[in-house]
Image (cartoon, rainbow, N blue to C red; front, side):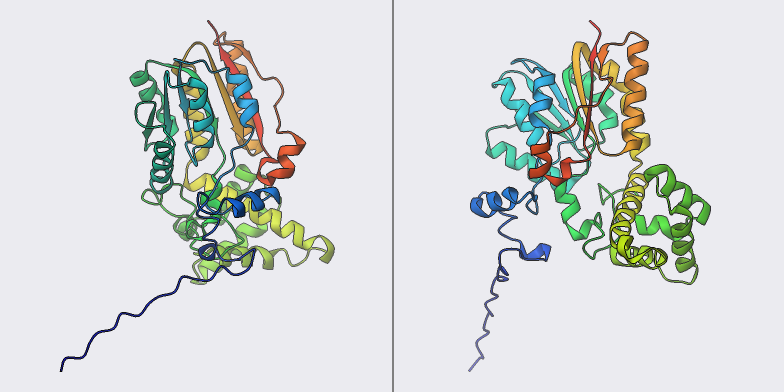
Length: 351
């Protein structure tokens, strides 16, 4: 008699308490449609649910862009689609939105989610390419009446340990927005010199301990120990800053980790080069009287954007531009901690 093969039933991982620590265990947060009460609770506590991204300064953006039905718009960074959806709602079914994103995994989810909410291909065209190709898309669209560029990294990417964006969870030190292209941060560190790494940390994030950290990382690699996980990099930073007074050590280590990870992310994704190219092509992509709003999240981005808009205004390309930054309200910052570093700059194309 043949032995019957039995299939073992695999139980779903139990939701461990109200605040599970591991990304994989947060299935309630990863399913916002089904567990709305959990999502609302997490947001009410001033946190961003895992797998979601809470769009920043939505009302301020809409107030400035003054979107009218029939217009054509461009969202440079689709992400979770919150800004895109808010702008499409202003079109009332008339006009069209174009959006770009380099992340194939997240953009596919967002495209599907927006289509289910009634924003299909008739009103939205999503391009899986970098926003510095704005000139090609503007040619296809016939120019844009409004443009938004949110230069921040989406919370979905930050929260997923497999992407390596956060020092708070162990994962591969990747940091690429598109994991199918280019080299990871770990591969970048494999061959970098101490001088180049120190320069990168200073230029990309104003890291005050750039020399010490660059030496520690390159010394570790020279010993034959790859720095290929987020934990390894965090531990090197912690050891390097051992000399700090105990009362300020924890906070300084946290901020240094944020800056080091930011500097590496900017480098592997060529973020400054991409932004510079985008700002150069921006004026020709805007229709006369067209408006652009740009959200920046660190001083390097903000300086580059400010300089480009000011130069465009002086050259007569823009009829007006933001002399001062617009910041999110205190209430928004309290509800969404990731909004605190946001600065919005804007410009209006001359008629």
